[in-house]
Image (cartoon, rainbow, N blue to C red; front, side, top):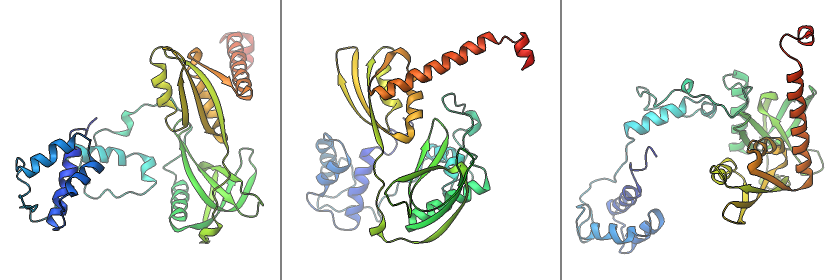
Length: 321
């Protein structure tokens, strides 16, 4: 909401119109075409009239403009402060963006002012030189269509070496981790492999691969259905929480909704935790396999809670621990 009135659609539409006029290629119907592409429907009633009647003294009756050069839209101080704040995020620094023009700008906020309460505290080390180097080599491989070799340790501590084609980089806000999805050579199938970037020990660029050799991995999507009680704004929170997923929503009555979610099977644990966080307001109705996972998770949490109750701070057991 910081910029909703700065350089609004009116500014962008008129700037495009004037740019064409400066180049001498503004046709009779161009104004309406630009408005249809870049503005709201009702703008067709306002902008052409204001320009043609010279209410805005920017165009002459023959479609020319007194401007000597196309209009530019320099960043406002507020926008520069916002960008400076974003560029201080260590995750954005991984992409090595330019900070030219922002050297003397004070950020709108600082990273140390933010406190996250809805994600794990063992996120990736974005300041690690090895991590930054691996990340940027992977980006280079994406841009140049090159194979890579990756050395990494599995979650079981086993060392692995793969020659592969990078397919996608993903970020989990819940885990605060990046992960790389690759298509490995010599596996005989089009299966993909997912590796947390924090587990990568080394990345090496190889040669380019022909586009005909590149095939997206076979989809690994799963689906679940939930019934939701829309109390305490639960529907809006749920839709926002899973905004990145493909979904279908069906209204049962004024208070109840049925929602189908599609998700990557590699994200199942994260989806499970998120669903449970909504408590009794959200009930999973299918599939049975996912319902079983929820029951197992809740039973495990109940057992951990019981253990915490039994082991009191001054008990003999606690002292023995």
